[in-house]
Length: 580
Image 1 (cartoon, rainbow, N blue to C red):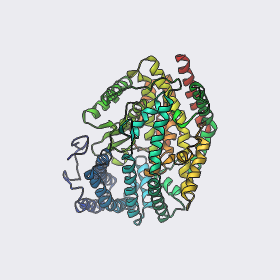
Image 2: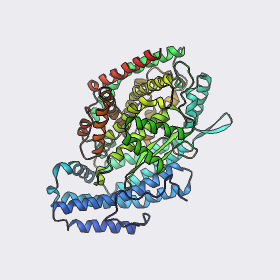
Image 3: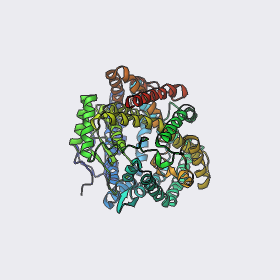
Image 4: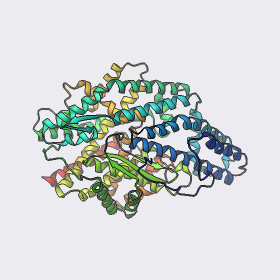
């Protein structure tokens, strides 16, 4: 049974080193290829031969990563499938642990190779830096710990993917319940919010138990690698060469100083428009004028067609790329039971094609999500011509610029789904969401800073720390009577469980995306061309240079944040005036 939404996808370039057929469950077959690479390294006697060796290494890595991606896609599309789970875990448990020491050995060989210094310095600057980091961090004793970590992360995926509630006589997934938080009837919103919140709280013990185990593993991984705590390890492992934990703390402070006043203004206006004495958690998604929810589409086919039209208005090449994804069935967009939560774009490295996974239920945020994930997909397609595999994926901070910029540029053509008034409303909602995102980003990032620098903390202390951050960044929302729900709200944030410290990237990238959007106001064609030129660089240049190429400043202090938030607020005022 083929559990992938798409069929067989040929490699973008014919294999020159990896055989056409490999049993990816058979380590003996795979190990032979690593043996050959190790043996051939000594035969590379000049820079050209070493570059070919690097290309062959990349070809093998791409083939392996594509197999891993396919198994992950199948598992997340079908969390209830024993076949998909078994295939995913077989690769995680039997193949990946064997891969890590062999990849490490190749990295060591590269660093010690006599021809390494003869390689073009600018071309291999980033790769050389990344390999040096990997060799510095690698510890054989961490391999079984990382395998155990991956299995626990899969347990979290399975747990969250299975959560449902009974509502109006039907079983519904938690994402499906999101539509009721936009209902004008406040009693309906409260009931829906309480059902979802209480369902998560029922699994509080499981969430906490999974995280306790993850925390223990991660702390041990960091100690094994010689780090005082996991924060220091994670910054190194994530390749954060261009900013520090202290920079992130300054970002949190900038959000508090610059963004929180705007958030409180929005909350105050919402409370006044809704005629409420206090804003409750179930009042934050509904239209403040109590208009019915924006319903851009009912069927996923309409979502796809509308976004296709948006991309056509932006750029014909983008539209062609999206059409290719549709034709090759590289879109799995509709929510259903047994499907993992959230959304992602996964690049199939050997095919050099992007796949988009999401859980659409007919809301405006589904349009925004598809625009977002399509931005990632266009990044993958822009870098498709890069033959050196290790450069076909950029740093996460810039990958998210691609996705968030596509939201901001695409949302201006959201009239593909709406009339004039609804279009203004959708754009207004989107900008308000960007402003409202920064405090949540700061909460999630600051919470992880706290978690991994407070070894031995109790679950209660962890909850109190999160509650304190909600006081700092939660705005004027009244959680009276729901304090336990607020203190455990982090259970819903999959990044904390699956991708530790992967969240501040969204904030850094949002600042880049806002700059591209501001640039587009004066010259849309140039802003898009600059962005695409940066995307085509993949991961071949350092992060600040990618930002500069896209026409952006790399920074996230208050001086960088302030003019962008001011510009967003000006646009919101203009949209409000146009709707009056």
